[in-house]
Image (cartoon, rainbow, N blue to C red):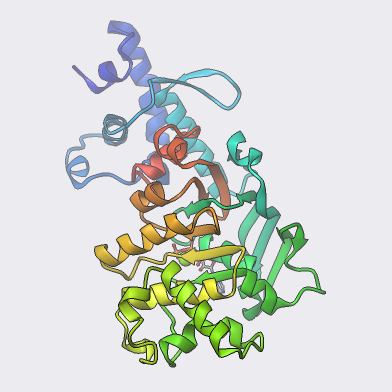
Length: 363
Ligand SMILES: Nc1ncnc2c1ncn2[C@@H]1O[C@H](COP(=O)(O)OP(=O)(O)OP(=O)(O)O)[C@@H](O)[C@H]1O
Ligand SMILES: [Mg+2]
């Protein structure tokens, strides 16, 4: 049975041939599209014609298609075969790359959640180069939200804006707003140090200060001028316990933090962020430098923090996003593509371009 017959089982004979001709010419014209660019080495070896190459690529993509039925509704409500929706997704991504306007697909469940953070028509330019394009998304309170997307799509830029880390970069211009508990983080009257405490950030590479474990954890309290030793000790223990590090370090809190392992340093940085009692914890690829055991510990920790804290995690690891988050947002070329409950994004996304990304077919 040919690819086209497996793809459109209700058609046969001449109908299939006519459909094949039409689609192959469409597919050939899309051969340069990033949506269908990523092929396995096996696919790329067998390729007599460019149209067939493309259809082989799509064929392999369709065969690993995990969940959706072959017919789905397009944005304008028309019923499309999966192949047609894939083509539509491909042309939408090409349109985004050309700079055409794009409307994000936001699932109603996200909008129904109370938001701690509102990103409102937010755009950002580094010099003349626009990096974020009119992003609107609410971050639900007490939940874990994962931000995924290809390298360079603006994930770090977006979360750095939440606590004004981009203030440290010259020549950055923004439009739109980001509100933490209803108050703009860009309001000239807000104290940036307070914003950074309320939206604590942990980076890809652990960055403990060259001081003791104890002093690292209580740093946010020290800069508030808190000196009460007993209170500092209580908070140090609370945060190290919350960061699942207490048992490993409780007997040597005066040891230099730089002597800890990478995974321990990352949990120490999370403990330090927690000491500031943040409303939102921003984690930018917190596990990318860690081994699987340390990664597991951080993932367990993220799940435990949910509820009491709101967590936003940027990750390249699809399994990690699926394991730890309640909601997932996909960014592409600085646009918010789709944002919804994590199970839906991974097993029943509304857009074929999301499906292509989460199943590793582009990015
Ligand atoms: N300080 C900066 N000055 C100028 N351009 C920057 C700066 N930081 C990031 N960019 C550009 O902004 C775009 C988005 O970068 P960003 O680091 O936000 O992407 P990302 O999605 O986090 O990527 P990755 O997954 O690789 O970490 C990239 O094109 C990058 O080159
Ligand atoms: Mg990044």
